[in-house]
Amino acid sequence: MPLRTLVEALHVVAGLAATVAVAAVCAWGYPQATATIWWVAGVAFVIVAAMGVYPLRTAWRADRARRGDG
Image 1 (cartoon, rainbow, N blue to C red):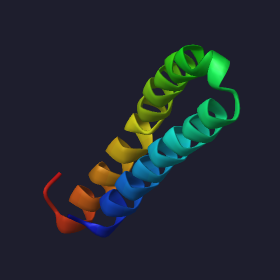
Image 2: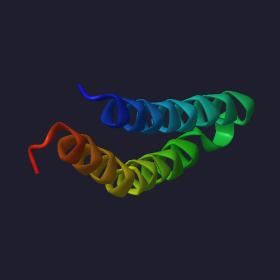
Image 3: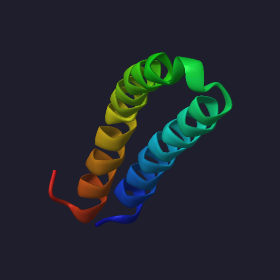
């Protein structure tokens, strides 16, 4: 995988991992609202993934242009 694309993909994965980690700590800290916390974390997970689409596509295009494919 080209460097820019790899960096962006790792950035998205780090954001998703952070979302899960924060949700896990919150669910552990307030067990009465575990279901609600995980529901909200699921929505945040989707939003973080969606926010990573444009930078990932931009990096992929830049890598393709540098290689001469596009």
